Length: 570
Image (cartoon, rainbow, N blue to C red):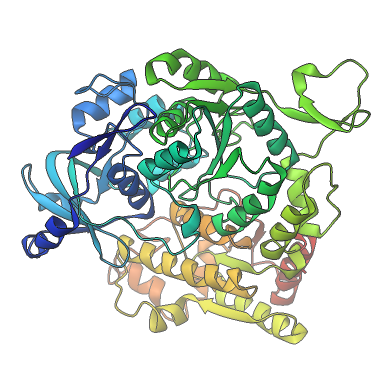
């Protein structure tokens, strides 16, 4: 590890070995244990290796982790750092390791990216982490949901030695490391640079806000959108980057630049804003825009914002001198009809008429193919969004049946399949529980882990069908709510997800026991049978509940078709 000193101030940590030394390490890593990085970890590793997370030299030690949670500082360096950067793994992998060991971190294609020299192995208290970092334990918060339901139980800390940088094939002309971007600023003669963070498509209000910020500070503007992990349900980064390229000509050509950031966001509000500011300092910015509810994840269980709308500005302002980047605060921008321009909301005078389209209303118009006025967004941007977000009646969707064995899921799924085939408007695929077990998951047992994996496989196939405009009909038991929610999130990113709880009573299901499974479970011949000695977790918010004990098949199918019609998919 060595540090790079650049003209724009601050030290960038460089964890990469020179190419010849990295090649020589290949023989040494052959027998080392390997960990395949998750999508979030892959983003973290890239920013650790390229200096974006300077002054971090690897995944946090337990001491640094605890200090960040409680004091927003690294214990060893005593510098401001608000977000835990940890390598989470499963218990089975961690049990085979000890402090002092080395492991190889690999990408999805098993390319070795780095060697981790293990200094710490510990099991965190995730409830404490959620409360300290995100100020909530509600799983309505996407990062808390990830922490409790996706992240591994064990954390591993230690310094990294970089072998290869993650390779990207998309938008290579817009991807610059911190060192490369600082060099670009020097070549362009840029001394004052305002950074702008975004995870959404940019519309007229964003263009006005960022241009005003640059003019206010007499600075150049860096638009640096996140192209790593964002909030589930966000517009994919391919579409967003095309939108950014369309909006760029609306800025002065010589004073504005676009560059991509491979960050895995946590949607952590104030702490996230401070984290973003530190990252932008590492990329060479001298100023950073923090707007209303910066990196907020939306609403909590009570329909309230997780964070005060200007809490992020307050926290960044508190530390801006220490982290050596100046915050540029901005309020919400609104459009005044009589002046035909955008202004900050605090500059609106009494009696002036504000035109406004909420995010919900914008998505509704996009989903229905309705007009979106030019004062709200640029036509070129809307055209790009319409390519990948067609009206609902042209989108793919998944109908996901869940319920006890014998509830009638397969019967309803087959009847619904016939109705869709009868109309012939879209390709349709049935992923019945028994069929999937034979064709896709024949090697799996009925342990909880394997049942979860089976449902996740079904969800993956259904998401691919949905993404390509088809209809997927799924009919597994799917007894666990957390796994169903994971499937919902994956599919909802590409189209519709309609959960149908087939809520037929256990007594009726047992009376239909054509395979004799309930009888065997009652006799103790089958262990872990859903509804007998393993729980079925009732869906918390399904789109439809059907009891086949008192509703015929045709009546049930009509309920589903009418629900799909109401939701706009038919």
